[in-house]
Length: 251
Image 1 (tube, rainbow, N blue to C red):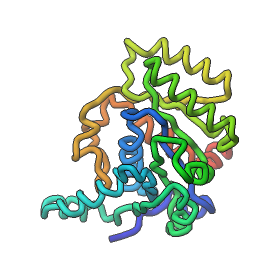
Image 2: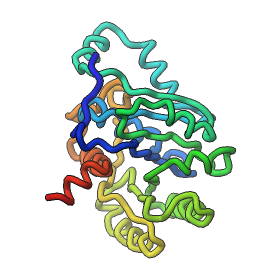
Image 3: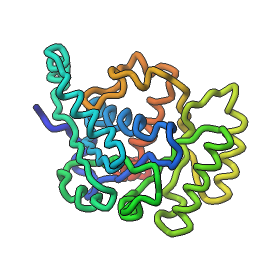
Image 4: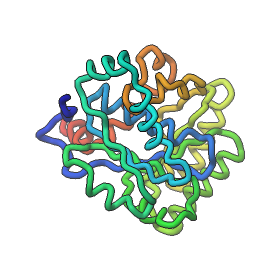
């Protein structure tokens, strides 16, 4: 199988963009979003990615790949072979291992997704977070989710683990009629503290959890992307590549 090609080999960044969906509140979709985005960029957009699973309490991504590989039937293997691309690398370890794990990633990888533990007090968390270029915090508009997310971002900023301008809120499980006005107000408040938000807002969809969608071997089927907000998310994250920013500035 071929290795995925870069968007523009001549302008590929010297080092990969390291990105983490992370929060201290469970059920916000950090792992699901990591897998959905990584698989779309790698298999559909042919941007080489890797995933580091250091959420040692679960190792959800690492174990998902093991299950998918073990359970792959002949039809799935045929479908995968049509993609003409090798599966992206998934490495596991402790949070403190992240710098070492990054050193094992092939040079052509452009995005590294880090699946962090859901507790900032875990040993080595600060080491792992210190490697991250962008921290994306999934959040709902509920009071508890917002409070937990804001406290998490504030703690990270106050102990100087990551600058505020490298942090983004991403609204997940979002319903426009219910959350639209409140999300706008909350974004304005977060901005006062230096925390920006992604433009993409991800509606509630139980189908994101389906094995056909949340896969480390296949991209989400296009039929599921309609009105999902996910394609906008994929595009917005892809734009974080320095080579794309440079291309936009040169226009």
